[in-house]
Length: 404
Image 1 (cartoon, rainbow, N blue to C red):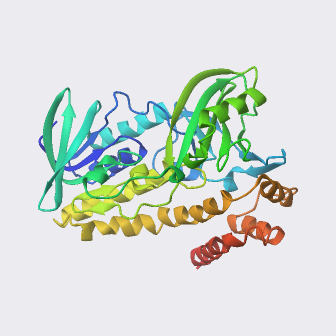
Image 2 (cartoon, helix red, strand yellow):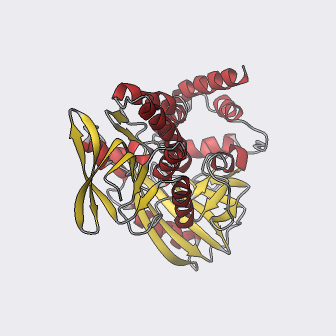
Image 3 (cartoon, rainbow, N blue to C red):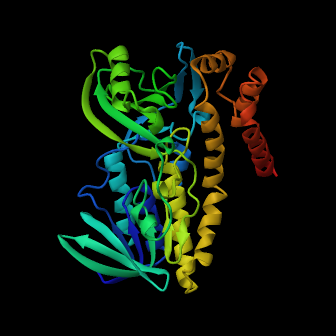
């Protein structure tokens, strides 16, 4: 490890790895550090991603793809099922990954591009001089040392310490976090071609249960509920009840738990000499909690902006705001729309959810776009979905602009 780099990236998840890879490919000296001893472990998501968006960043590899699904099946509280093709099923439906191997593949890509990678290396603080972030105080092999740089990128997850040390408010309230629990299970007997989602306040208040196939009769069975809803029962207790009801004879092989920000985008993601990416910037989808693709998209933008800023010898917040503008006009726009949906969704009763499902029975989703889906929902549920009118207008404008 050297004493000076162009860029130091803290956190080797998808956001950090893509940032480091992009910066290194541009010729910047880049350090990527990860506090855990193994990249990708523990797993903290359902492991589903869109095929189209994934291919923008890395070529699919059978070693870290567990399942190639063709759609999703969504169940309302009364059991009504809506089946959607992969193309319209959302950003988490497509490939189901083996995250431990996938994250390591991304880190390998960054190392191959020229980044130096160190695990079991923790950020202990920032070096700040004249209101500029100038580097990171690092704990490595039991010793603290200072490593200086031109830009620090915080990819250190929910309630980012890197952001907080730089003066950015990264704190979250319970209502802004999905508390999640997930089992890797065998013997569920699900159709491995589909992802499953179960809705309802009895099953998962202000959230949902997911089942993602992992191949060879394995599946991720997980739950996410708002932190503010986990008073009487925890996420794990809700999940246990679901598993006992649906899969009484299946076996639990692994368990993971964690939190996902669902508040929408953070107020700012830049400071002098600093950018935040991924969960540190709250770039996960407020409805699904998915964040892999958003993190990779934002990481690429951050790496490119870092190169441009360093080339211009200007790492001020004004210069780095190019990153703010680019990710907010792409990834951020989708997150803002999802936040509108989430804020409406958490108010739905089980009766509301059943009515929505019934209004979509018999609809052919194989060729339906998002705007078609929204129109079908509005037509059948005008009063119920009135709060989503802003989103409908945004989607219409986006698709018309895209066509032009």
